[in-house]
View 1: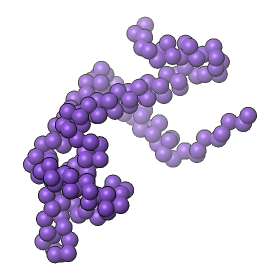
View 2: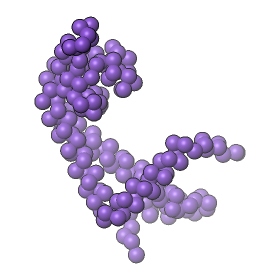
View 3: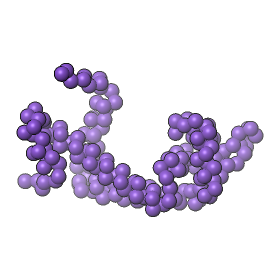
View 4: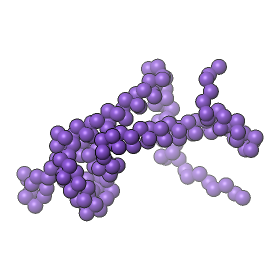
Length: 171
């Protein structure tokens, strides 16, 4: 018999109230929500420890994912922000020594934003912190279980991304 977690108690509480409740569906969805909330708390703690706010981290993350440099307009598009909002973020990050803006070598009207070594270090520190916790959680499974979980979650995500929107219940 598997050990019980707090979701088991949640299901037991709601089963008499909602007789049609599928315990496997409710259990899987509630567990995904609780794991997501846990990882969100870990991420927020890593940002607090690094003295970063989420927008600063998102900007550093986007820059790192682009090889460490990008045009402000590219960052604005990727972050789905107005250019002025990106400028404000870059001003703060540049003041903290995490990015630098340099003239483009191909177009003197443009600027390139580069991640500095300090910016890369603070970004990597937050990524390492979260990555360690993700590895710890998924490490509860053996290699075969990790592959299986990944495959099952892919199927669920594909259903969410490509399936029809759920119908509203009729009252």
